[in-house]
Amino acid sequence: MSVPVPCDLRAPDLSEDFELRELTREDVAEWYHVYCTRDHPTTRADTFAEGWGNTRFAPIATEAGTPVHTYYVASTPEAAYMESVLHDAQLAPPGMFEVASLSHYHLVLLRLPASLQYVSFHTPFLPRLAITRAQLIDSRATCYGQTRGWSQAAYLQRTSAQAVGYGSKRDDAARCLMLFKQRLPDPPFEILGEEPLAVGRRRAELLALVRSLKLHEV
Image 1 (cartoon, one colour):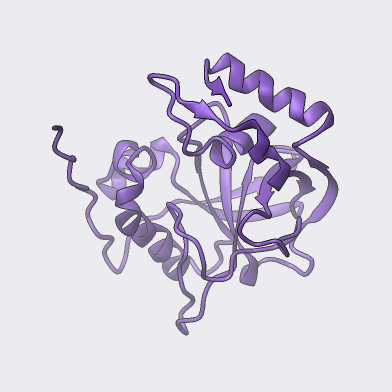
Image 2 (image 1 turned 180 degrees about the horizontal axis):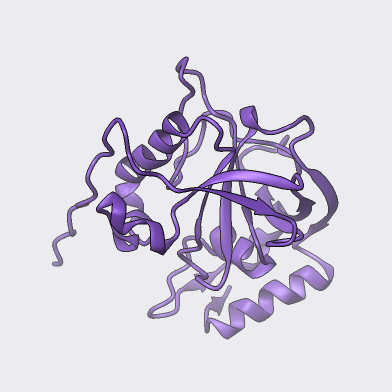
């Protein structure tokens, strides 16, 4: 039996050298978000997580201790699929994918504000924090308790930050953001479209990805 590798990510200090960057529509014109209604039937295209869930960077809290409302977006539909629908799919060796589960998923196309400030967790800025991508982005789900400490610190220490940005673990060709609703304008973004993943071109697109990964459809 293999022994789990312990999480070796250090806790952030009270004053970290976080890199604050500006993101514009020239960098990424449109973003993608996938939401699921399986466990929360009232979830919609504009629903932020309000302190629930268990992800790499959320939940986190405001200075007052109330939940930061968070929302994940990716720069490509493929990355949005990999980070949501296929998040837990085993890739080596290829695992199973339940096609019927697509009935719960929807893809959202959206446009963010013209300019947005974010703390960058991209590779060039991690060495000065004395951490690595392997520790922060590529670690296992059992390490989320440690990785969330860094998004929490970024939120508290960079008060103008409206998101954290990073490269997708599941699709490193894409960019990802976790948005902080409390620091975004109202409305926080413009929804350009929404499509179900169970039918039509998005179903075909996702199943093409599943087959390219050699996953077993059930």
